[in-house]
Amino acid sequence: MSWSRISVYTAVVLLLSLLVAVISACAPQRGAPAPAVGPGETGFPKMTLKFNHVVARDTPKHKAAERFAQLVRERTNGAIEIQVFPNSELYKDGEEIEALQTGAIHFIAPGTDKFGVLVSEWEATALPYVFSSVEGFKQFEDPDNPVARELFEKLRPKGLLGLAIWENGWKHFSSSKRPLIVPDDFKGQKFRTSGKPDEAFVKALGGSAVVMAFSEVFSALQQGVVDGQFNTWNNIYTQKFHEVQRYATSSEGAVILLYGVATNAQWWDSLDSRTRQVLFEALKEATKYGNELAAEENRVAFEKIKASGRLEIHVQTPEEAALWRVAGEQVQREWVSQGRISQQTLQKLASLGKTR
Ligand code: SIN
Image (cartoon, rainbow, N blue to C red):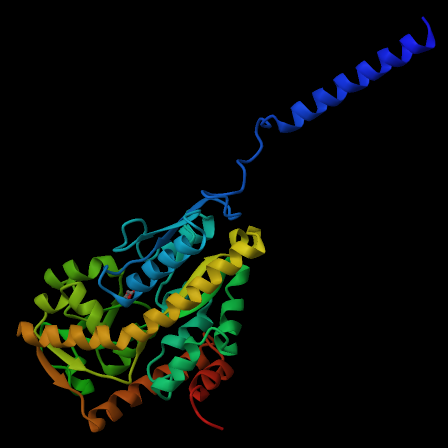
């Protein structure tokens, strides 16, 4: 074979190998993940995420969650879809934290007392009279607040990452038996509570209490399993608790219902930084929106409950509040002496909102 024939042959072989290499690089790889771009080539991974919660649609929590979903949808051009499941539709209390840990869902926003099953220090945020003022818990809700961030860090070893603090409002007692004015009135009455701090508060006031999932409260009240409950006007109205109760006491200043928005830490860490950023920024805006809504939603619910004429409502006087406070502060001391929380956390929470 002449040298010119050999070089033509070599060139053809090289060209063919190049062609094979290009074709196989373009062909879809079996078992490889789908291309990580959503509709409209946004550059965001295409994902459907689940946000589970236990309250009704007409609540600050659901509205904030929907706003979060809407902002994420808009900013990712539909690539990231967040489905919000209200009313314990997917998971109820006692289930949703575990579902988040296993990665079955992506976001939850339980009352902060409910993180107590993982880290008892969280219960400090739900103790009676723990915040000195409205400014105090408003400062706790600030995403840059170091006290909240410190508490969020404690959830990491449990597989959860805290992202934001949401608010509902002040909790108020109601009863089917008799008015609740002074601690003596709690004697012989049983209340449903959302967690251990409220349970201890009821006991310190002289009543008995049982921790129960939120989804079970209406029928427990209706069937007389418990005599009363402790919740925000917004939750009382949207769950129709007022329809199966006779008395209520407006007790602003005792216990504020705060929520911790959390995600699965491992899943969050697996996201690319741009996706994490878009989710975090949207959540920050939804947090501001929901937390500004809370007071008004509760005011409206209170008016509707009054207008329904179902409840005899007593508005607590400062003298009566002082008696309840004695019971609340006793619970704070118990929590520290039992080692459930530290004195430092209590002090940090109490000092929020105070000017130095
Ligand atoms: C909620 O607002 O998420 C429910 C609170 C409760 O369990 O009472």
